Length: 252
Image (cartoon, rainbow, N blue to C red; front, side, top):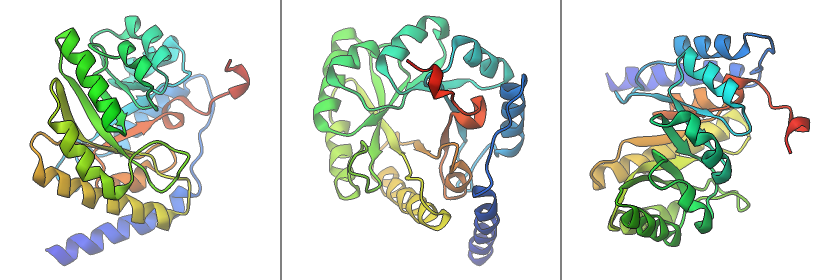
């Protein structure tokens, strides 16, 4: 049975290698609806570990109209990269599963407390302590993920060898629940992404076996979500795969 599982996974990953290099989106009037329909039909409900898979729409720079089109098409989880953008859009999505993915400054945490369902990008004890303090002051408990850095110094996240220590210290803080790990993969070759995804899943399993309440491995974006899912991710953050390519000329 174990050998069958290994060979089955290897076969799936090999077939994905070809598709990884040919990923593209088509722009048309029904872009969002068609993309969501395809994603819901092709992404499995659970991963190989029996964990429910969540599709989160990365709605950075997207309009309220675009987000509502995704919502009406079946997407129920959204996430922002900028705290101010979260603040401005939140009134239109009260009660929704609305998350935060981006690098977070301490002075912007106030925009998220009591509103954000999951802060996915905690990468320091100082940040976790500030979230804890503001959550306690507001009388709420905030769910967070520890962000794992994949060797890119210019990106956020904590390096692999320090994840366990930060997870442990953050878990001891009041008014915080540390629910798992988040990571952003570099845009490298299929083989390197696959290796890094498997390493991150192994780290997640160690964390999950050691701490209670761990349930989220947020790993995979539009360029690599299929690889991530086949390596054990249970949450993918999709922007272009849902909304199409961004027109950066229209972004202030």
